Image 1 (cartoon, one colour):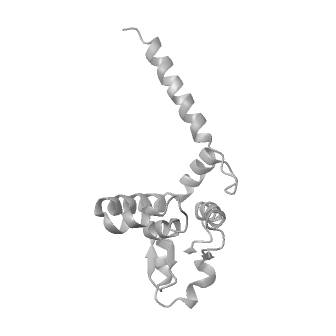
Image 2: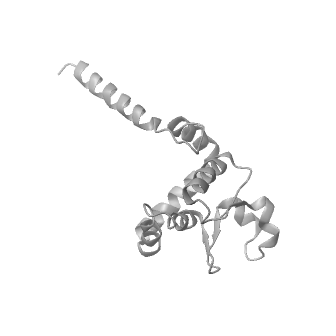
Image 3: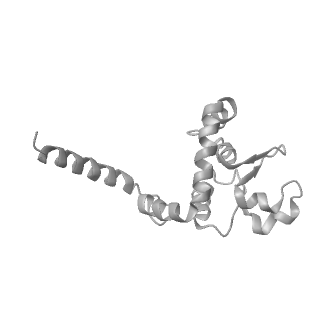
Length: 145
């Protein structure tokens, strides 16, 4: 997996992925490796993560992320969905582009929802969801009919 080593959002999630995939995937920032990979222009690394599979196949963006999840039993179905369902692939690519274009803001949101340490994710989002639902119920109850 080749990623942007200067991106805080990327570093956060690569740290989590390294723990998840253990030693089944090698991770390297493109800044350290791009010269050795002639098939991929340096500019392409700035736009999306790349995964070079052991068979030489190159995955990009959402496809690369889903291919990594193939190494885990829980999420292994995602790469199949991505390859075989054009609607899922289109939606995934759209979301990936959105994330890619808003990485700084999404790092802040990520830390708010999951904590600062990617090796020990905290699921604060559940607390926020419950508080939000409680607030909605309270407001609905207080509004006169």
